[in-house]
Length: 338
Length: 242
Image 1 (cartoon, rainbow over the protein chains, first blue to last red):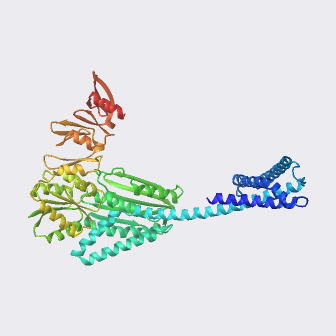
Image 2: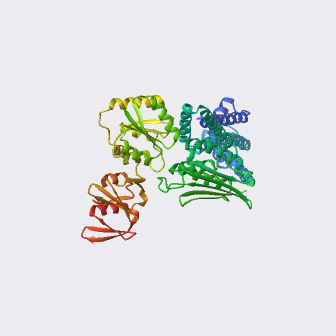
């Protein structure tokens, strides 16, 4: 709708300009009424020719590298358009014949007029195109920001299993009856954990120490639910604690280790987490017991795929991600250049 | 008196149910179980009126527990997962409580059970097969000595019908289970397990080759050399897949 309106305006503007100028040229020797009547059809046709310049502008946008070929095309087409206009005038005057008073026309001036009007049209078309391009760029930037925000939220949802929340709230409800102080503490821990996830998740990189803080809080909450069944053994050396890692890289993996690992074994077991820095390589290993008869045998769930994908993105493919199972234990190992 | 068993692998989840149930004088808790194995044993021992059953548990999930019961108590699922709620509702034979558990919901579930007492209960095994996700990922078998075997379906070579029971063949060992071969065929992935014969359900990944045995009948030779009969209609079903 907007485009059509614009085109109509351009058409009207060129036509009126052509008409006015032609009448001015002719009026020296011709009565103004006749001059207007004679000039109207060629002026309308120039309006159309001007409209056609839109295709040229679209085909050769200003952003394209080759400026000289744009200039050549514009000048060439302007000359062709004006030539065409002169031809239209000549045949129109010939068709009119001498039924009315003879009309004398300076065709050089008509040619120059056509050239001028055509070039002006092209300039305006390019201006409109530029405005459109910049508006589209703005829209695209906005769209991208919205998409990025959505992706963050989706990532957050994928990071935290909602059943973790439901089960934890059930534990809080249970503690309210028997140990109200513990219930308060559990509610506090849950709030701290979710706040920390939101804060860390919004950052580009965090230290391994920060990530391990999150992991430890998570495990503390799960320990309230699983009791003796969940044991942990975490060793992070000082050098690796200062390494930068993408946020929420380990938390979903540790969540897997609890959900598909310790929770699937009757007597539970120990989750081992080791992080070392050697020769500029950060190496993290998560190792947990797993039931060999468990239903979900694939080993590579969504959490695992996400972690693998993110590692590859942040390290330009230099990171190594391995997951495997033997002797009833499942392990994930990550190697990330510092 | 409603004799009740609580089954949940989380101690706190059992605590809160016990606390809520204590308010009702008609309820007696006869056992508490931390996993499916204990639950199967406790139900056989106590023959309860009501089973409060978690679904996600180690080794045996709630549906597998139901399948292994030889008695049919009233069943109320207590779980954080709402994805089975619709199916539970469709068979409208049991109640379904979401965690965190609401005391009022538990009370209304108890009321319903009191009103229905005397009505015949739906058979637990049937409920289980109606509720379980398909295709089946693993089989659970209760042996004569009471021990429970879990068989991931990927380990099954083939299943043979034997009277009213089936014999499950996995890497040289066999397990016997009370179930019709037709019911099992319905529950397993049809792209993997094919009824190649009236009495044989075959894991097609185990087939080494097919040989003509007599007019209109063939044998499938499995990777381990076992020969399994293939009927004419069984061969037609196989050909469709291979």
